[in-house]
Length: 470
Figure 1: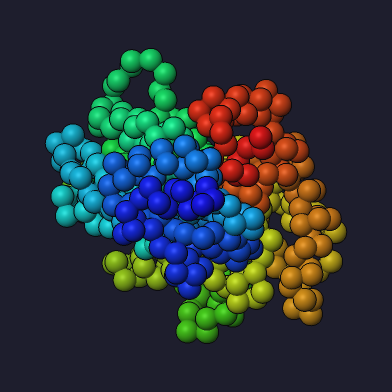
Figure 2: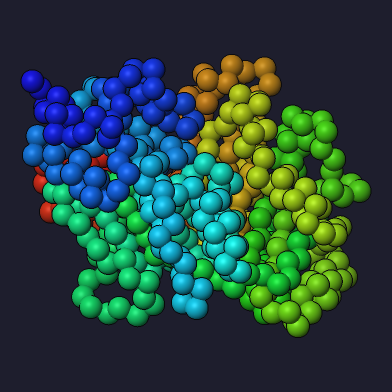
């Protein structure tokens, strides 16, 4: 009996799947970069069952790969090709344990799909601020393990900023229970933060208490045309001022990205009368029923147009038009896929230099990219831009993307770092970005990461080969 057989022998048969056809569904990453091997998928239903699984794997030295909705862009939830790891799916650990409306908090298990939690908060007359394009499939445990960003970071912060309490199983099977939904709990190290963004390398998140917010009584959405990209920071500052810091989203869309989408889906229509070089999808929300939000945004646009900072724009007249505007922003990745996919640079820089980054990085691709087509969009209100490059029409996408990643991407990342930025804003590290972390990571930080990994997971069983080299 080998080690994996020993683990499976410790567990009830209804906690795992060994059918190769079923197991295969858990072995390929979201972007289909990597396909691993595993003899079984473990599917616990309770935190106690997660403890039992992890304790057995620790005893027998079997590595575990925690997996939520498997939406990682960096293959963080994909097993290796060696076949010596077991996949731990949290999909059945999916109960909403409770909502405390007076405390503005929600407690749920790691396998809950994000959209389900959004609906639960909405039913309680509140809202969960975390929002991603993959909301219908991503799970909250994965959101926390990758410290997901999304479209509301500008006002509400990253995933870690919404966490009040956490429950997790450590690599030796111990239960970390700091799940209390408290806004003040100053009792030593804030250990839950170590697990947020660790991508399953330090333990298995099983439940979380999250901050909720008051539901928006007013939402105003605008789609704006901008000719001069240098105006972005001024427009953002003015928008925050006019709305009383109630801008929830400030999304940039380049002409190239919108053109790709409109060409890929001919049923779509341009929201403005004429094309522009740059666009912003701006959204403001307030829970106040008396603040004149629509009037504030209308006055904002009047001033911006009067100064020539905005050349055209439209305000969404109702939920249906709002959905159409957001569709344009959220389906740009699909347009890239329709054109053979893209090389993705998930970059962040200080918002003050973001227009300069886009301009200079675009010049790098124009000079060195052999005809690559730019697709630039993202959450520029918080300094995060997705600077993507699609292969030329005449090129073979796979070969071109491999060449560009090798020859051009380092120039883009060097520029971001030189501007005080990062090569990884919200996607995480996983396997895909390990080399980038080696190249750009602060040596002292990497030393601390290795030390924390060694202290909490000395046997190296938790998601080996991800985030930190050991």
